[in-house]
Amino acid sequence: MIDTLIHYGVEAGQFTVNLAVNKVALSYPAGNKVLSIGGVFNKFTWKDNLTLISIGAFLPLGFDFYPSERIAEGDFWPDYISLQWRKDSDGTLFAFQPNRYNLPAANYELSVGAFLEPNAAIGEDFNLVAELPTAGNFQTLISMIGVPATLDGETFSVPIFAKVEHTIDLI
Image (tube, rainbow, N blue to C red; front, side):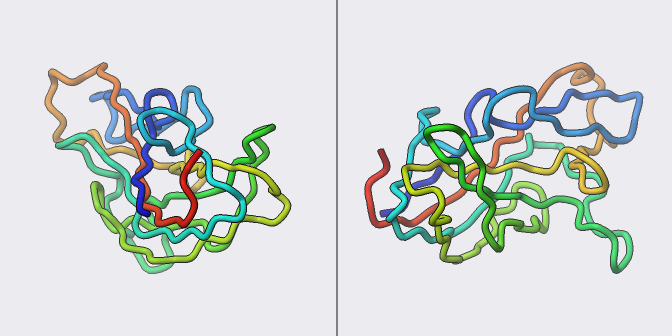
């Protein structure tokens, strides 16, 4: 079966339009960054076979990442999504490889087709957690260039989505 999981409400990253600058930072004001269906923290069973079909992030129409492309070879890729497993009982996060997926453009659905193997240390039900980076050199920035003045001060969400094929029903 295939499910599309997405950030809902406080799980999604947010930014506030500020036309006094060229770019603003994305932040996660609250939440666990869990991808879900309908806002319910759907759980995978640790014995499940998972394939990440595709992944992406929704930016509101008219906005773009800053910069929208690498400026020179060797520069950091402007935006990528990081994935982790979240143990359901205590919220412990487990990384896996590869866990970083570069986004070539805003509102782009990146086809992946990667098998995701849950960490054996989880040993129980788990969620899939996704985030755009919010610190250091990898911080996700949203361009304010060309944004209409009527949007100044407005806050927008940037939900991440993932299409996942799995063999056991979500709980």
